[in-house]
Length: 447
Image (cartoon, rainbow, N blue to C red):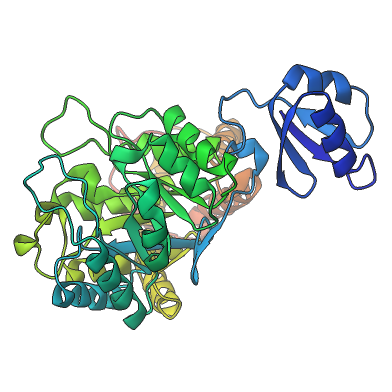
Protein backbone atom coordinates (compact mmCIF):
# COMPACT_ATOMS: atom_id res chain seq x y z
CA UNK A 1 0.00 0.00 0.00
CA UNK A 2 1.17 3.52 -0.85
CA UNK A 3 0.35 6.25 1.67
CA UNK A 4 0.76 9.98 1.17
CA UNK A 5 0.48 12.20 4.24
CA UNK A 6 -0.44 15.83 3.65
CA UNK A 7 1.54 18.36 5.73
CA UNK A 8 -1.61 20.01 7.08
CA UNK A 9 -3.18 16.67 8.04
CA UNK A 10 -1.98 13.82 10.21
CA UNK A 11 1.73 13.89 10.80
CA UNK A 12 3.86 11.25 9.11
CA UNK A 13 5.41 10.12 12.41
CA UNK A 14 1.97 9.60 14.00
CA UNK A 15 0.71 7.56 11.05
CA UNK A 16 3.87 5.45 11.05
CA UNK A 17 3.61 4.74 14.78
CA UNK A 18 -0.06 3.78 14.60
CA UNK A 19 0.48 1.51 11.61
CA UNK A 20 3.44 -0.19 13.25
CA UNK A 21 1.46 -0.68 16.45
CA UNK A 22 -1.25 -2.37 14.38
CA UNK A 23 1.30 -4.87 13.07
CA UNK A 24 1.94 -3.30 9.67
CA UNK A 25 5.38 -3.30 8.10
CA UNK A 26 6.04 0.31 7.08
CA UNK A 27 8.85 1.84 5.04
CA UNK A 28 9.53 5.52 4.34
CA UNK A 29 10.02 6.16 0.62
CA UNK A 30 10.52 9.92 0.92
CA UNK A 31 9.12 12.77 3.04
CA UNK A 32 5.35 12.39 3.24
CA UNK A 33 5.34 9.04 1.44
CA UNK A 34 5.08 5.71 3.27
CA UNK A 35 4.93 2.22 1.83
CA UNK A 36 3.23 -0.65 3.64
CA UNK A 37 4.95 -3.87 2.57
CA UNK A 38 2.89 -6.09 4.85
CA UNK A 39 -0.48 -5.66 6.53
CA UNK A 40 -2.55 -3.87 3.89
CA UNK A 41 -5.89 -4.85 5.45
CA UNK A 42 -4.94 -3.53 8.87
CA UNK A 43 -3.64 -0.32 7.33
CA UNK A 44 -6.82 0.22 5.30
CA UNK A 45 -8.98 -0.21 8.39
CA UNK A 46 -6.84 2.19 10.41
CA UNK A 47 -6.69 4.91 7.73
CA UNK A 48 -10.33 4.80 6.63
CA UNK A 49 -11.85 8.27 6.82
CA UNK A 50 -8.72 9.96 8.16
CA UNK A 51 -8.20 13.48 6.82
CA UNK A 52 -4.90 14.48 5.28
CA UNK A 53 -4.01 10.91 4.36
CA UNK A 54 -4.41 9.43 0.89
CA UNK A 55 -3.71 5.77 0.22
CA UNK A 56 -3.90 3.27 -2.58
CA UNK A 57 -2.98 -0.39 -2.95
CA UNK A 58 0.20 -1.45 -4.78
CA UNK A 59 -0.99 -4.59 -6.56
CA UNK A 60 2.47 -5.83 -7.58
CA UNK A 61 4.59 -8.05 -5.32
CA UNK A 62 7.39 -5.48 -5.50
CA UNK A 63 6.40 -2.52 -3.33
CA UNK A 64 9.25 -0.10 -2.77
CA UNK A 65 10.52 -0.05 -6.37
CA UNK A 66 7.03 0.29 -7.91
CA UNK A 67 6.53 3.32 -10.16
CA UNK A 68 3.63 4.54 -8.03
CA UNK A 69 6.00 5.22 -5.13
CA UNK A 70 7.90 7.85 -7.12
CA UNK A 71 6.14 8.64 -10.44
CA UNK A 72 8.75 11.22 -11.40
CA UNK A 73 11.47 8.55 -11.29
CA UNK A 74 14.60 8.07 -9.20
CA UNK A 75 17.98 9.53 -10.05
CA UNK A 76 21.10 7.63 -9.01
CA UNK A 77 24.30 9.61 -8.79
CA UNK A 78 27.73 8.09 -9.42
CA UNK A 79 30.41 10.74 -9.02
CA UNK A 80 29.42 13.60 -11.34
CA UNK A 81 27.20 11.34 -13.44
CA UNK A 82 23.48 10.87 -12.83
CA UNK A 83 21.37 7.97 -14.05
CA UNK A 84 17.68 8.66 -14.59
CA UNK A 85 18.01 12.34 -15.52
CA UNK A 86 18.23 14.13 -18.87
CA UNK A 87 21.64 12.60 -19.63
CA UNK A 88 21.82 9.31 -21.51
CA UNK A 89 24.73 7.74 -19.65
CA UNK A 90 27.35 5.68 -21.49
CA UNK A 91 29.51 3.30 -19.46
CA UNK A 92 32.18 1.57 -21.52
CA UNK A 93 35.37 -0.43 -21.25
CA UNK A 94 36.83 -3.89 -21.74
CA UNK A 95 35.19 -7.05 -20.48
CA UNK A 96 38.13 -7.62 -18.14
CA UNK A 97 41.23 -5.89 -16.86
CA UNK A 98 44.15 -7.65 -18.56
CA UNK A 99 47.27 -5.55 -18.05
CA UNK A 100 48.15 -2.06 -16.91
CA UNK A 101 48.82 -0.97 -20.51
CA UNK A 102 45.54 -2.44 -21.73
CA UNK A 103 43.33 -0.78 -19.10
CA UNK A 104 45.19 2.52 -19.55
CA UNK A 105 44.62 2.44 -23.32
CA UNK A 106 41.00 1.45 -22.74
CA UNK A 107 40.40 4.29 -20.31
CA UNK A 108 41.96 6.83 -22.67
CA UNK A 109 39.85 5.59 -25.57
CA UNK A 110 36.66 5.47 -23.53
CA UNK A 111 37.16 9.03 -22.24
CA UNK A 112 37.95 10.36 -25.71
CA UNK A 113 34.94 8.49 -27.13
CA UNK A 114 32.47 10.29 -24.88
CA UNK A 115 31.72 7.62 -22.26
CA UNK A 116 31.18 8.85 -18.72
CA UNK A 117 32.12 5.74 -16.75
CA UNK A 118 34.82 3.12 -17.14
CA UNK A 119 33.65 -0.50 -16.81
CA UNK A 120 35.80 -3.60 -16.60
CA UNK A 121 35.86 -6.85 -14.66
CA UNK A 122 38.50 -7.75 -12.08
CA UNK A 123 36.69 -10.88 -10.90
CA UNK A 124 35.23 -12.87 -13.80
CA UNK A 125 32.65 -15.61 -13.23
CA UNK A 126 33.20 -17.92 -16.22
CA UNK A 127 31.26 -20.92 -17.45
CA UNK A 128 34.45 -22.94 -17.90
CA UNK A 129 36.87 -23.33 -14.97
CA UNK A 130 39.77 -23.27 -17.45
CA UNK A 131 39.20 -19.77 -18.85
CA UNK A 132 40.60 -16.48 -17.57
CA UNK A 133 39.01 -15.63 -14.21
CA UNK A 134 40.26 -12.06 -13.91
CA UNK A 135 43.20 -10.44 -12.11
CA UNK A 136 41.32 -10.08 -8.83
CA UNK A 137 42.60 -7.48 -6.40
CA UNK A 138 45.38 -6.43 -8.78
CA UNK A 139 42.76 -5.75 -11.46
CA UNK A 140 40.70 -3.67 -9.02
CA UNK A 141 43.68 -1.43 -8.29
CA UNK A 142 44.57 -1.04 -11.98
CA UNK A 143 40.96 -0.19 -12.88
CA UNK A 144 40.63 2.41 -10.13
CA UNK A 145 43.94 4.06 -11.08
CA UNK A 146 43.03 4.25 -14.77
CA UNK A 147 39.65 5.72 -13.93
CA UNK A 148 41.19 8.40 -11.72
CA UNK A 149 43.73 9.38 -14.36
CA UNK A 150 40.99 9.99 -16.92
CA UNK A 151 38.31 11.39 -14.63
CA UNK A 152 35.99 8.40 -15.03
CA UNK A 153 34.02 6.74 -12.20
CA UNK A 154 34.45 2.97 -12.38
CA UNK A 155 32.03 0.06 -12.64
CA UNK A 156 32.99 -3.50 -11.77
CA UNK A 157 31.36 -6.69 -10.59
CA UNK A 158 31.25 -7.96 -7.03
CA UNK A 159 30.76 -11.73 -6.74
CA UNK A 160 30.34 -12.49 -3.06
CA UNK A 161 29.33 -10.71 0.14
CA UNK A 162 32.79 -11.16 1.63
CA UNK A 163 34.42 -9.57 -1.44
CA UNK A 164 32.21 -6.51 -1.17
CA UNK A 165 34.47 -4.41 1.10
CA UNK A 166 37.49 -4.85 -1.22
CA UNK A 167 35.52 -4.04 -4.36
CA UNK A 168 33.78 -1.07 -2.75
CA UNK A 169 37.16 0.37 -1.80
CA UNK A 170 38.05 0.75 -5.49
CA UNK A 171 34.80 0.95 -7.52
CA UNK A 172 32.20 3.71 -7.66
CA UNK A 173 29.34 1.59 -9.04
CA UNK A 174 29.03 -2.02 -7.90
CA UNK A 175 27.74 -4.45 -10.51
CA UNK A 176 25.69 -7.53 -9.75
CA UNK A 177 26.21 -9.78 -12.75
CA UNK A 178 23.58 -11.88 -14.47
CA UNK A 179 24.71 -15.06 -12.70
CA UNK A 180 24.23 -13.39 -9.31
CA UNK A 181 20.88 -11.74 -10.07
CA UNK A 182 19.22 -13.92 -7.41
CA UNK A 183 22.12 -14.29 -5.00
CA UNK A 184 20.01 -12.99 -2.16
CA UNK A 185 22.76 -12.88 0.44
CA UNK A 186 24.81 -10.68 -1.91
CA UNK A 187 21.78 -8.46 -2.58
CA UNK A 188 21.20 -8.05 1.16
CA UNK A 189 24.85 -7.13 1.70
CA UNK A 190 24.67 -4.50 -1.04
CA UNK A 191 21.49 -3.19 0.55
CA UNK A 192 23.38 -2.41 3.73
CA UNK A 193 25.53 0.15 1.94
CA UNK A 194 24.59 3.32 0.10
CA UNK A 195 27.12 2.64 -2.66
CA UNK A 196 25.22 2.66 -6.02
CA UNK A 197 24.43 -0.77 -7.45
CA UNK A 198 24.05 -1.84 -11.09
CA UNK A 199 21.75 -4.87 -11.07
CA UNK A 200 21.79 -7.00 -14.19
CA UNK A 201 18.87 -9.18 -15.21
CA UNK A 202 19.52 -12.91 -15.05
CA UNK A 203 19.48 -14.80 -18.35
CA UNK A 204 16.33 -16.67 -17.28
CA UNK A 205 14.81 -14.06 -14.95
CA UNK A 206 11.35 -12.65 -15.50
CA UNK A 207 10.89 -8.92 -15.11
CA UNK A 208 9.04 -9.49 -11.87
CA UNK A 209 12.00 -11.49 -10.56
CA UNK A 210 14.36 -8.68 -11.57
CA UNK A 211 12.31 -6.12 -9.66
CA UNK A 212 12.04 -8.38 -6.63
CA UNK A 213 15.84 -8.68 -6.68
CA UNK A 214 16.01 -4.88 -6.68
CA UNK A 215 13.48 -4.89 -3.84
CA UNK A 216 15.94 -6.90 -1.75
CA UNK A 217 18.55 -4.15 -2.08
CA UNK A 218 16.10 -1.32 -1.37
CA UNK A 219 14.45 -3.21 1.50
CA UNK A 220 17.83 -3.49 3.22
CA UNK A 221 18.40 0.25 3.06
CA UNK A 222 20.01 1.13 -0.28
CA UNK A 223 17.77 3.07 -2.70
CA UNK A 224 20.57 3.63 -5.24
CA UNK A 225 19.85 0.89 -7.76
CA UNK A 226 20.20 0.99 -11.55
CA UNK A 227 18.62 -1.88 -13.50
CA UNK A 228 20.31 -3.39 -16.55
CA UNK A 229 18.67 -5.35 -19.35
CA UNK A 230 21.44 -7.55 -20.82
CA UNK A 231 19.55 -10.13 -22.85
CA UNK A 232 17.79 -13.35 -21.95
CA UNK A 233 18.23 -16.93 -23.06
CA UNK A 234 15.72 -18.07 -25.69
CA UNK A 235 15.64 -20.74 -28.40
CA UNK A 236 17.50 -18.37 -30.76
CA UNK A 237 21.13 -19.33 -31.45
CA UNK A 238 22.14 -16.67 -33.99
CA UNK A 239 23.11 -14.31 -31.16
CA UNK A 240 24.55 -14.90 -27.71
CA UNK A 241 21.29 -13.80 -26.05
CA UNK A 242 18.03 -12.17 -27.10
CA UNK A 243 18.13 -8.50 -26.12
CA UNK A 244 14.69 -7.81 -24.65
CA UNK A 245 13.94 -4.19 -25.46
CA UNK A 246 10.30 -4.86 -24.56
CA UNK A 247 11.63 -5.06 -21.03
CA UNK A 248 12.93 -1.50 -21.09
CA UNK A 249 9.57 -0.01 -22.05
CA UNK A 250 7.79 -2.23 -19.51
CA UNK A 251 10.21 -1.39 -16.71
CA UNK A 252 9.91 2.35 -17.35
CA UNK A 253 6.19 2.11 -16.64
CA UNK A 254 6.42 -0.25 -13.64
CA UNK A 255 9.42 0.99 -11.64
CA UNK A 256 10.91 4.33 -10.69
CA UNK A 257 14.47 2.97 -10.92
CA UNK A 258 16.73 3.95 -13.86
CA UNK A 259 17.11 1.35 -16.60
CA UNK A 260 20.17 0.84 -18.82
CA UNK A 261 20.86 -1.66 -21.60
CA UNK A 262 23.89 -3.85 -22.32
CA UNK A 263 23.83 -4.52 -26.08
CA UNK A 264 27.23 -6.24 -25.93
CA UNK A 265 26.07 -9.20 -23.84
CA UNK A 266 22.59 -8.87 -25.30
CA UNK A 267 23.87 -9.79 -28.77
CA UNK A 268 27.43 -11.10 -28.48
CA UNK A 269 28.05 -9.73 -31.97
CA UNK A 270 30.21 -6.65 -32.50
CA UNK A 271 28.30 -5.44 -35.57
CA UNK A 272 25.02 -5.44 -33.65
CA UNK A 273 26.15 -3.35 -30.70
CA UNK A 274 25.68 0.09 -32.29
CA UNK A 275 22.22 -0.50 -33.82
CA UNK A 276 20.92 -2.05 -30.60
CA UNK A 277 22.41 0.84 -28.58
CA UNK A 278 20.44 3.26 -30.77
CA UNK A 279 17.33 1.15 -30.29
CA UNK A 280 17.85 1.25 -26.51
CA UNK A 281 17.93 5.04 -26.61
CA UNK A 282 14.83 5.15 -28.79
CA UNK A 283 12.82 2.91 -26.48
CA UNK A 284 13.56 5.08 -23.45
CA UNK A 285 16.58 3.60 -21.70
CA UNK A 286 18.58 5.83 -19.36
CA UNK A 287 21.92 4.68 -20.74
CA UNK A 288 24.00 1.83 -22.12
CA UNK A 289 26.78 -0.41 -20.85
CA UNK A 290 29.03 -1.54 -23.69
CA UNK A 291 32.32 -3.37 -24.07
CA UNK A 292 35.15 -1.40 -25.68
CA UNK A 293 38.67 -2.74 -26.17
CA UNK A 294 41.66 -1.09 -27.88
CA UNK A 295 42.28 -4.33 -29.81
CA UNK A 296 39.11 -6.46 -29.69
CA UNK A 297 40.50 -9.33 -31.73
CA UNK A 298 43.19 -9.90 -29.10
CA UNK A 299 40.97 -9.42 -26.05
CA UNK A 300 41.33 -12.08 -23.36
CA UNK A 301 37.56 -12.23 -22.89
CA UNK A 302 34.51 -11.39 -25.06
CA UNK A 303 36.43 -9.85 -27.94
CA UNK A 304 33.73 -10.84 -30.43
CA UNK A 305 31.26 -8.44 -28.82
CA UNK A 306 33.70 -5.59 -28.11
CA UNK A 307 33.96 -2.48 -30.27
CA UNK A 308 36.92 -0.13 -30.71
CA UNK A 309 37.26 3.30 -29.09
CA UNK A 310 36.81 4.87 -32.54
CA UNK A 311 33.53 3.00 -33.05
CA UNK A 312 32.47 4.17 -29.58
CA UNK A 313 33.11 7.82 -30.49
CA UNK A 314 31.09 7.49 -33.69
CA UNK A 315 28.22 5.87 -31.81
CA UNK A 316 28.15 8.49 -29.05
CA UNK A 317 28.24 11.36 -31.56
CA UNK A 318 25.35 9.80 -33.48
CA UNK A 319 23.36 9.27 -30.29
CA UNK A 320 24.05 12.85 -29.21
CA UNK A 321 22.52 14.29 -32.38
CA UNK A 322 19.37 12.18 -32.09
CA UNK A 323 18.89 12.58 -28.34
CA UNK A 324 19.28 16.37 -28.61
CA UNK A 325 15.90 16.43 -30.37
CA UNK A 326 14.33 15.08 -27.17
CA UNK A 327 16.18 17.56 -24.96
CA UNK A 328 18.61 14.89 -23.74
CA UNK A 329 22.39 14.84 -23.71
CA UNK A 330 25.03 12.18 -24.03
CA UNK A 331 28.76 12.42 -23.48
CA UNK A 332 30.72 15.13 -21.66
CA UNK A 333 28.95 18.48 -21.09
CA UNK A 334 31.07 20.22 -23.72
CA UNK A 335 29.64 17.87 -26.35
CA UNK A 336 26.12 19.24 -25.90
CA UNK A 337 26.55 22.33 -28.12
CA UNK A 338 28.12 20.30 -30.94
CA UNK A 339 25.35 17.72 -30.68
CA UNK A 340 22.70 20.43 -30.88
CA UNK A 341 24.33 21.95 -33.98
CA UNK A 342 24.48 18.55 -35.64
CA UNK A 343 20.86 17.80 -34.80
CA UNK A 344 19.74 21.17 -36.14
CA UNK A 345 21.70 20.61 -39.34
CA UNK A 346 20.12 17.21 -39.88
CA UNK A 347 16.62 18.53 -39.31
CA UNK A 348 17.18 21.55 -41.56
CA UNK A 349 17.95 19.14 -44.37
CA UNK A 350 14.64 17.41 -43.75
CA UNK A 351 12.81 20.75 -43.64
CA UNK A 352 14.33 21.75 -46.99
CA UNK A 353 13.25 18.46 -48.56
CA UNK A 354 9.71 18.82 -47.17
CA UNK A 355 9.46 22.43 -48.39
CA UNK A 356 10.56 21.41 -51.89
CA UNK A 357 7.94 18.64 -51.93
CA UNK A 358 5.23 21.05 -50.74
CA UNK A 359 6.03 23.56 -53.48
CA UNK A 360 6.00 20.85 -56.14
CA UNK A 361 2.70 19.41 -54.92
CA UNK A 362 1.03 22.83 -54.67
CA UNK A 363 2.06 23.64 -58.22
CA UNK A 364 0.78 20.27 -59.41
CA UNK A 365 -2.51 20.85 -57.56
CA UNK A 366 -2.94 24.19 -59.29
CA UNK A 367 -2.46 22.59 -62.70
CA UNK A 368 -5.01 19.86 -61.95
CA UNK A 369 -7.50 22.41 -60.56
CA UNK A 370 -7.26 24.50 -63.73
CA UNK A 371 -7.73 21.44 -65.88
CA UNK A 372 -10.85 20.44 -63.93
CA UNK A 373 -12.15 24.00 -64.17
CA UNK A 374 -11.80 23.89 -67.95
CA UNK A 375 -13.85 20.68 -68.14
CA UNK A 376 -16.58 22.07 -65.88
CA UNK A 377 -16.78 25.32 -67.83
CA UNK A 378 -17.05 23.44 -71.11
CA UNK A 379 -20.08 21.54 -69.81
CA UNK A 380 -21.68 24.54 -68.11
CA UNK A 381 -21.15 23.32 -64.56
CA UNK A 382 -20.42 25.38 -61.45
CA UNK A 383 -16.69 25.53 -60.89
CA UNK A 384 -16.91 25.88 -57.10
CA UNK A 385 -18.54 23.10 -55.05
CA UNK A 386 -18.95 24.21 -51.39
CA UNK A 387 -19.98 20.72 -50.23
CA UNK A 388 -16.76 19.30 -51.64
CA UNK A 389 -14.69 22.00 -49.90
CA UNK A 390 -16.44 21.25 -46.60
CA UNK A 391 -15.67 17.54 -47.00
CA UNK A 392 -11.99 18.26 -47.63
CA UNK A 393 -11.76 20.51 -44.57
CA UNK A 394 -13.34 17.82 -42.40
CA UNK A 395 -10.71 15.37 -43.61
CA UNK A 396 -7.94 17.88 -42.86
CA UNK A 397 -9.20 18.51 -39.34
CA UNK A 398 -9.43 14.77 -38.61
CA UNK A 399 -5.98 14.01 -40.03
CA UNK A 400 -4.24 16.72 -37.99
CA UNK A 401 -6.28 16.63 -34.79
CA UNK A 402 -3.66 14.70 -32.78
CA UNK A 403 -0.55 16.20 -34.40
CA UNK A 404 1.54 19.19 -33.35
CA UNK A 405 -0.16 21.39 -35.99
CA UNK A 406 -3.62 20.75 -34.60
CA UNK A 407 -6.98 20.78 -36.36
CA UNK A 408 -7.48 24.56 -36.21
CA UNK A 409 -4.13 25.55 -37.70
CA UNK A 410 -4.40 22.87 -40.39
CA UNK A 411 -7.85 24.13 -41.40
CA UNK A 412 -6.63 27.73 -41.62
CA UNK A 413 -3.71 26.71 -43.81
CA UNK A 414 -5.92 24.66 -46.12
CA UNK A 415 -8.50 27.47 -46.37
CA UNK A 416 -5.70 29.73 -47.59
CA UNK A 417 -4.79 27.12 -50.22
CA UNK A 418 -8.44 26.88 -51.35
CA UNK A 419 -8.71 30.67 -51.56
CA UNK A 420 -5.65 30.77 -53.81
CA UNK A 421 -7.00 27.96 -55.98
CA UNK A 422 -10.34 29.77 -56.45
CA UNK A 423 -8.56 32.80 -57.80
CA UNK A 424 -6.39 30.91 -60.26
CA UNK A 425 -8.50 31.59 -63.36
CA UNK A 426 -8.43 35.34 -62.90
CA UNK A 427 -4.71 35.58 -62.22
CA UNK A 428 -3.60 32.96 -64.71
CA UNK A 429 -5.48 34.09 -67.80
CA UNK A 430 -4.64 31.82 -70.72
CA UNK A 431 -3.56 28.88 -68.58
CA UNK A 432 -6.78 26.97 -69.13
CA UNK A 433 -6.25 27.10 -72.90
CA UNK A 434 -2.72 25.76 -72.61
CA UNK A 435 -3.68 22.77 -70.40
CA UNK A 436 -4.55 19.60 -72.37
CA UNK A 437 -8.07 18.28 -72.15
CA UNK A 438 -8.51 16.82 -68.68
CA UNK A 439 -10.41 13.68 -69.53
CA UNK A 440 -9.87 11.15 -66.74
CA UNK A 441 -8.73 13.81 -64.21
CA UNK A 442 -10.43 13.20 -60.87
CA UNK A 443 -12.27 16.11 -59.25
CA UNK A 444 -10.01 17.99 -56.83
CA UNK A 445 -10.85 19.76 -53.61
CA UNK A 446 -13.06 22.76 -54.22
CA UNK A 447 -13.76 21.67 -57.79
